[in-house]
Image 1: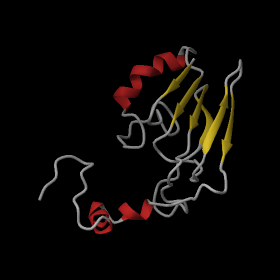
Image 2 (image 1 turned 60 degrees about the vertical axis):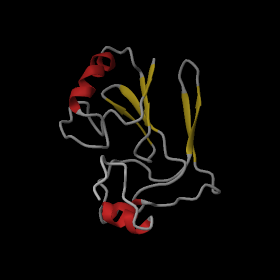
Image 3 (image 1 turned 45 degrees about the vertical axis):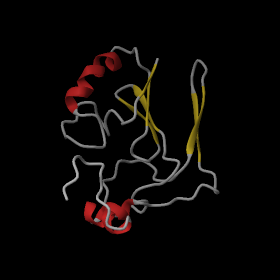
Image 4 (image 1 turned 180 degrees about the vertical axis):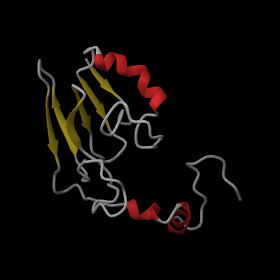
Length: 142
């Protein structure tokens, strides 16, 4: 069985306690760790971070699917190192007894790094969009 989620379950361990926007919060993660530890789930596929990574975490294969539109902090200047590859692309998955996953990074897919757009905070976003308020973090304050 595979579990597909938007966000990665964790960065390096299901016992992580940090509250971060990069992964599931610890309380939510605890709801699925029994299935992971019991061997019911053999693979976890996720996205959200716009990085690709394929590694074993506590006996379960965790695969991060890269973004297709953009990356963030491709040079690794300010985001934490999550041991993923920051390039646009996609993954080809062949379902069989042992699934095969192949990372594809076609040259025509441009690596547009939007990390610097929000690096200085949400205020810089407003500059880039003509002064319009950013509506993604809750109620807009005028």
